[in-house]
Length: 139
Image (cartoon, rainbow, N blue to C red):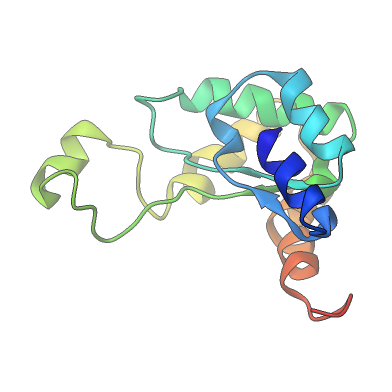
């Protein structure tokens, strides 16, 4: 919430802000507060199970969808081809789900099994990023 307060004080249009790493929490009240104040939330870091399990992340996203918030969430894994914190050969052993196919192969089917619809998935994966990155709105 502190980020939003600073952005608002500086005149930032919160409807153009994505609060990243929101996928690291299961605190639904906090996530809803971010949305109510106007921001999108980045439900990211899928695959970094050491911080929060994929199952907990999926349940959180599914619950937020049940509450009608698919139009304010974006999904990502934050996987990268290089991470200086760990030697590359250790990543598969330490973070086996942190790769580019995790969302497609594992997360989407899990979300569907928790009742997330195709329309909600399309909203989070296609429509919302398109809105965020579009030039409409003066940016």
